[in-house]
Length: 66
Image (cartoon, rainbow, N blue to C red; front, side, top):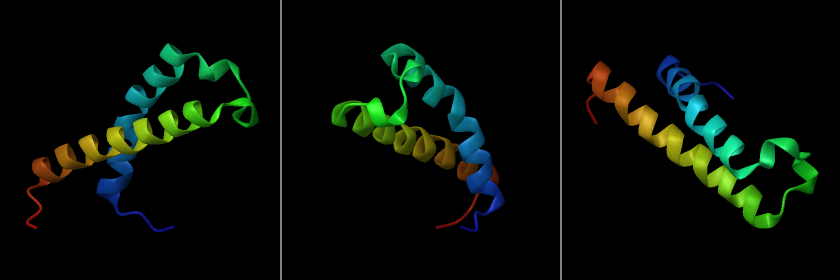
């Protein structure tokens, strides 16, 4: 997968929010295989949301027109 620098920056900036979700739900103490379907879906949804929020901030800061 080839990511542009802005995407990498957004991923890095989203890590605290994802970590907070993992800590607050307690899923960090489980193996990924032991997550329930709802826990796995919640983690994925949180990752996507955090990435989209941060990517928008990065694009706004760099004034990318589209």
